[in-house]
Amino acid sequence: MTPMPATKRLVGRRCIVTGGGSGIGRASAERFAAEGGLVLVAGRSADNIEETVGRIRAAGGQATAMVADATDEAAVRAMVSRCMSEFGGLEVFLANAGHPGTNTPLLEQTVEEWDEVWRFNVISSFLAVKHAGAHMVAQGAGSIILVSSAGSLRANAGTIHYSASKAAVNSLVMGAANAFTGQGVRINAVLPGLVETKMTRPVFEYAKQRGKLDRLGHMVPLQRAGQPGEIAAMAAFLASDDASFVTGQLYAVDGGVSSTYPHGRIPV
Ligand SMILES: NC(=O)c1ccc[n+]([C@@H]2O[C@H](COP(=O)([O-])OP(=O)(O)OC[C@H]3O[C@@H](n4cnc5c(N)ncnc54)[C@H](O)[C@@H]3O)[C@@H](O)[C@H]2O)c1
Image 1: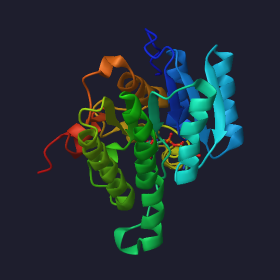
Image 2: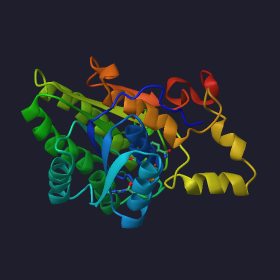
Image 3: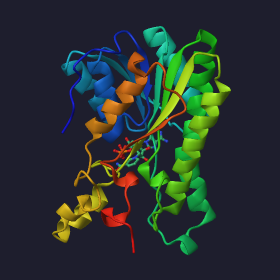
Image 4: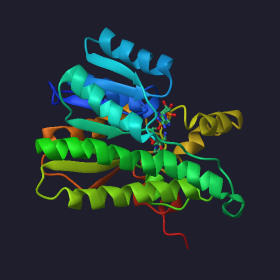
């Protein structure tokens, strides 16, 4: 279930994707390149990001890899500089790198866990907004996309720190859109529901072991988990001029789960 581009909306656009070595980041990097973008694939594991770049080049696209930690300000600044030196500009920044934290009951969560989750999800997003934003404001154009989560809209007993951090990302999107008023820079968020990636593999493995794989889609109106390419399709839309009048918005791509009551009915 990977939508393929019908048009090439990103021809010549210079793009940075963080966490591009797997999952949603890899799918988005591939999608941007398939639509004609030049993609700087950033991530922590050289092997993984090189593999993404190899896949893009094998498909005829343009990409380069950069080992960089999205939570490190110097590294984020360096990503922007590298995109400028390698491709000559920057029009699109997808801040995708993120971290789920441990699945721990609320009263057992620690300040250290909250700090870690905040750093991976909120600080990394802020750094993307700050450094890509500075460049884009100066050129009077650009699109920043933050990867939040449908979990930011719903209660989740085990990963409250994660949901709260992604809610902060949503707030950052709305605040930054206002801060960029009149400056030509758009910023939006995509909020994935349950998507099959490295991050969620334990969930799928657990369900599989218990013979309950089909239950994962049980509360989802579209009755299944998503695929990374389905999130990438929304990211590509937001990166493109098809979204030229869209900023400050939160787009759930979650099979409808955030729009419904648990089990699809009023809980009475
Ligand atoms: N998979 C889901 O169900 C789901 C749901 C909602 C939101 N998300 C969000 O989607 C984003 C991508 O997650 P995914 O599901 O593709 O998981 P994933 O584990 O496949 O990908 C995350 C990637 O980010 C990289 N990364 C993590 N921290 C980094 C850092 N500090 N600097 C650079 N790279 C870093 C990892 O190495 C990995 O390659 C995350 O922000 C996640 O919170 C995922």
